[in-house]
Image (tube, rainbow over all chains, first blue to last red; front, side, top):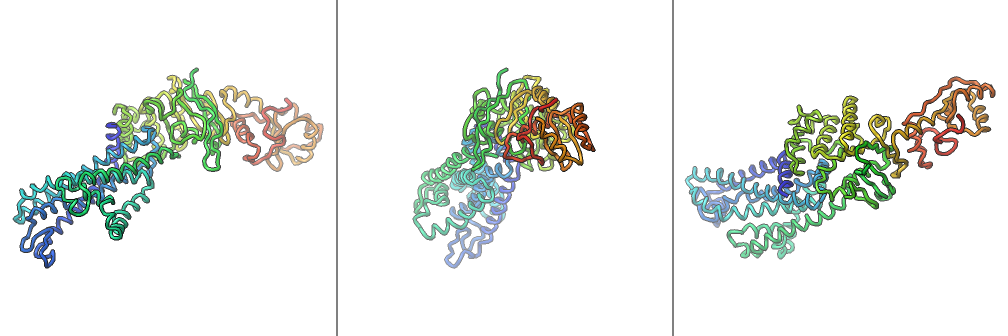
Amino acid sequence: MIALVRSEWLKMRTTAVPWVLTGIALVINGLLILVIFLSHDGRNGPNGGGAFVSPGYTVPHTAQQLRNLVGSGFQGYILALLLGVLCITTEFRHKTVTTSFLVTPHRPRFVAGKLITSALLGAGLAVIMLAATVIGGGLTLSARGGSFSDMIHQLPAVAPGMILVFALFAILGVGIGSLLTNQVAAIIVTLGWFIILEGILVQLVHSAEKWVPTGAATAASNLTRGRAVDFGLFNWWQGTLLMLAYGLLFAGVGSIILTRRDIT
Amino acid sequence: MPSAIEVHGLSKQFGSVRAVDDLTFEVPEGRVTGFLGPNGSGKTTTLRILLGLVSASGGTATFGGRRYANLDHPVHRVGAVLEATSFHPSRRAEDHLKSVAIGALIPLSRVDETLDLVGLSDVARRRVGKFSLGMRQRLQLATALLGDPEILIFDEPSNGLDPQGIQWLRTFIRHQASLGHAVLVSSHLLSEMEETVDDVVIVSHGRLVLQTTLADLAQRAGTSTGMRIRSPELARLTAALATIPVAYRQVAADTLVIDGATPEWFGPFAAQHRIILYELVHERGSLEDVFLSLTHGFDAANPGLAYGTHTGPAPMSGGLA
């Protein structure tokens, strides 16, 4: 399995997919950091809520604000999800799956290799984004008179959860891709669900929030904080198991379908 | 001679199409077996079933009794050159081979060796998207050879190769057989394979027509000579021919082929009936003719050729000599 994962990593890094996705993630991350630092001078509203910066301050300074800064790359989970989807659907798009199945004739094993590789790459993406935030956000913070060390103190509260969630989303992506091997269809369904449908569902059926993938992932992200239950979500390990269940269920059904499929 | 590949009672149904129908044949070690049949006769499907890419509806296709998926190290045992499209266009040739080598636990030194062997060393770092069809075909071959397999399977390998490439491939295939390896090569053209194969497995409409040696096929070709006759009096000629037990077929408005006939017999026959002749050609049967008559004549419902036959399926031997 280690050989398979190494082979998958080589296949991934010799296409544009991980690099383009990482680039997009970093650009979005940079923009969000910019928004955080531009949101001073009471722009957060009359109540002075100050999710990013308190009224009267020019930089984040409360623990919560600094956590929001450190976790500003969190929305990149959608790119970890796409990483997983593309990891498997690219094989079908370019018909490289023929060669892959000749090397790994046992198809569930092929899917397992993709799951592990994508989980590692998803986690890697989270690490890259955290590093970029610490460097980019930290430098900006220090330059404007904020406390870099206070920011670093919040890293343990944010980083483990974010790395876990990115890995879980990448696994879910492989699951979706193994069910929907048509790349375009898989991307449309994935983005359609996570950007539009899931939000509508939660609005209509509020109790569904803790059960949908984003709710489960949000719970999982509280790995080192344990506040998700306050918002009516599962606790972190329940959320993690639920996310894993989605990913592995899809991948399992996908493997069965793939095993029966003729590669012509 | 032990069999490297055994196909037994193999069938494949695609919806209403029976692509492979109760097909049985064997491929021995140390020989090159040509897997021949017209396009759409089930060759590719059979090879893909062998390689575990397509599931069989019935029967078995095994290597030494084991299905491809059950081989311990399939890439070390069996090398396959299938259609030349399965590369990621932005991946470099070298990286493609490395990904296979790593996944199949093959030392990376084999990557350079196989690139060298197929003559792609100079373009190892080039992206496959910029490769010509012939280069892709060579890269496919390099992929198949990575594990140094003792069984090689080629699906229409000449497609996209230039004449030098085809010549090189023939030499390569012969060399593999001389090492004791089993080689199965599919083609829709027997003429392409004549110099390469020892045995032939001929299929048509998914069914086995004939498994034999090339030598035996050549013998059959030798007996299928005939006369091609162009005449303005074809109606009179056919009337004359109808009185004797001879098979003939009309191949053009003014042309007949009489199977098994010789000039020594036909010359006096035409003179006796006072038939005007424009052209009189003693046709030497070729392997290709035998192949065509076997694959087209096999299914009488399939007109296939531009001419009809007088006596049903084209006869293998003439009534007169």
